[in-house]
Amino acid sequence: MRKLIAISAAVLMCGAAFAAITVDYENKDSKEYKWDAVCSGSKTSGVTFKGGTTSASSIQGSAPCTVKASGGDVVLKGGEKILIKDGKITIKK
Image 1: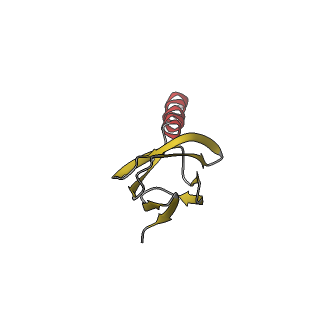
Image 2: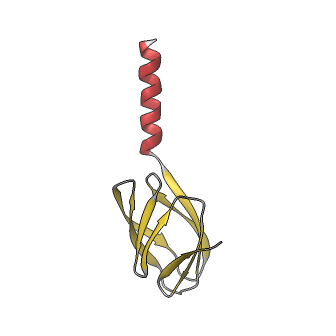
Image 3: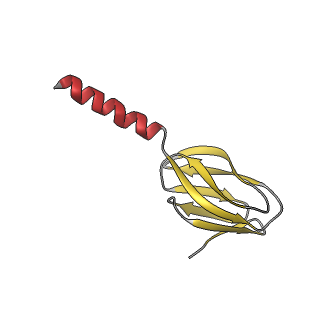
C-alpha cells in the first residue's frame, strides 16, 4: 500500500511540473511580442506572440498567469481568446 501511495504522489508531482496554460490570440500588430509571465509565483520569460497572425500560445506554469505586457499586466487562467493591438492585450468576450 505504501508503494502505491509513493507512486501516486510521484505521478501527481510530475504532472504539476509539466503544467501549462494555453490561450488563443489574434495579434493585429505586425510586431512579434515576447513578454514575461508569472504563473502561481514562478516567473516564465519570453512568452511569444507572433506578429500579424491568429494562433495559440502556451505559457509554462499553473494558472493563474500574469502576463507582463507593455500595455499593462493581464491575468490569464487558460482557454481565453485574446486580442493584441498597439502592444496591449484585451480579453475577447
